[in-house]
Image 1 (cartoon, rainbow, N blue to C red):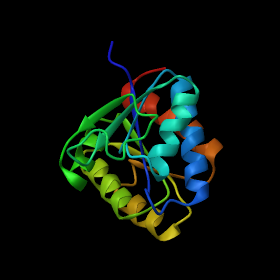
Image 2 (spheres, helix red, strand yellow; image 1 turned 135 degrees about the horizontal axis):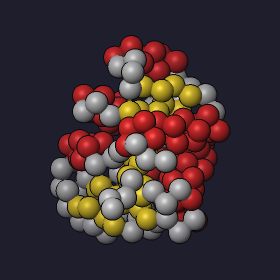
Image 3 (spheres, rainbow, N blue to C red; image 1 turned 90 degrees about the horizontal axis):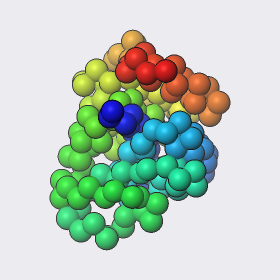
Image 4 (cartoon, one colour; image 1 turned 135 degrees about the vertical axis):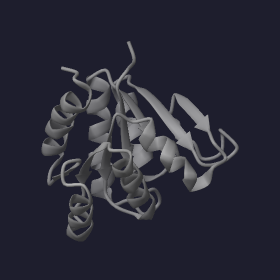
Length: 169
């Protein structure tokens, strides 16, 4: 049976402390459910924090890397590094390989991933304090975007959305 893959996206170098704290806890939750975590794979920001959280619970982590060298900047918490040499074009792989996407914080790369996810009719959970971006994405796809205000709400919504998206209990 195929494993459920949850994509956690968010800023790298410019991630806020709260974004990284949330990503760490979401990574732990994903691992505790027996799901697989997928991130951008680098050793910075949300992607590193989520991977570390999942590894703290012995979860399986996948990193979709932008460069052509799997040892350059990869998070130590990534189990499977997918080397793409695609730069930001890898964002499409990130979201298409995920059953649902959770965005912690906001940046240009994160906005790109959210938009690609919505174009692919994926469910997206936004844990973000930027009201303008939340409003924008919710208006783009009201049925696929879930705006949450807390980590607890994000985790509860992830479970509910996953059941709807994949018919998994």
